Every structure is written in structure tokens, then in C-alpha cells.
Amino acid sequence: MSNSPTEFYSRERWQNWIERIDDEEIDPEDESSARLLLNLQDDTAIAIAKIVSAYDDGGLGEEAALEKLTDVREIVLSDVDIDDEETLMLVDGVQTSLVCVFFAAEEYVAAGPAEEATVSEYIRAAADAEAEEDLDAALSYVAQAGTLVIDGEEIDISVAEELEYGLVTEWVNGLDSLQSAMSDPEVVEEDE
Image (cartoon, rainbow, N blue to C red):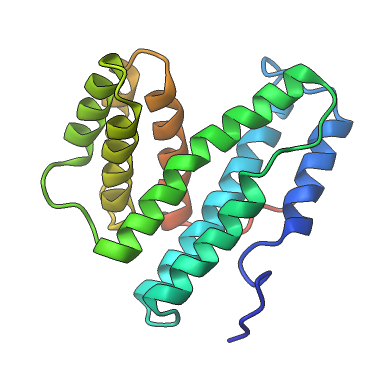
């Protein structure tokens, strides 16, 4: 197995997505625009799922897995060079959704799946914490839900639908991509 930093995800791959999004007139109401943004998110979630799976299969040790997650996080969460404000906001939304996916994967590698509650209970706790404006706790709860998603549990969509729109809904959206990636880690083709 090669140990190149681009083995799971590369800056070039991320940049190709960003350039494609930047070149298109992105309209969130338009289905193909929405799909492009979702593909960007899913593509990253798949890379994260592959790192976690390599860790689970013994192909990567804990330290190497955490290092690779950090490498991908630095690529994906870095500032994006897009001139159009609205497009930049949409990409920022994707990045926000992915923050939790990284935290969940790191937590999973470092400590395994959370054991104190169910996915739904963690998501509700996160929503309560967000309502109290305790965003650190909210992120921590959603990340713990994410460790269970990595472990094979499903997100109950009805719980997600109860939530007030905010950071927790964005993070749960990221976990939804992670759930898809864990069950079907097929690469999203950039030219679809």
C-alpha cells in the first residue's frame, strides 16, 4: 500500500471540484447545481470512509489514520478561492457539513464508537446544545452520533426533519453523506 498523501484524497482533486463549481452558474434551486455540491461533499465523505475502513481493516494504524484524516481536512477546510459570494457561501455550507464528518472519523479512530446513547439521542442532544448556544457541545454530540454511523448504525431521518435549521442540521447532512459513503464507498466521478 503506498503512503503518498494523495492516496485517499488530493489537493488537486479538491481544486478540480472547486474550479468546476466556480465555472458553473451555481443555483441551489437547480437540481444539477445541487447535485454538484452534494457530489463534492460525498466525494470527500468517501475519502474519509476509506481512511476509516483502512484503519478498521488494519491497513492503517491509529496514528497513520489520524494523520491522513488531518491531511484531507487541511485540503477540504482551507479557504476557497471563488469570486462569486453566493457560490462561496454554498461551498462554505459543504465545508461546514464536512467539519462534523472529520470530527466523527477522528473520534472513531481515537476512541471507537460512542456508547452512551443512540444516533438519534446524540442528534437531539446536539440540537438542545445548539439551542443553548453551546456549539462545542453540539458538535461533540453530532460527532459521537457520527462514530455510530461509521460503526454501521443508521440516521433516523425523521429526527433530522424535526430539527430547526442551523449548524446541527448542516452537520447531520454531512453525516448522511458519511453514511452513504460507509455503505457504498464508490468514488464519485468528477465528470458526471
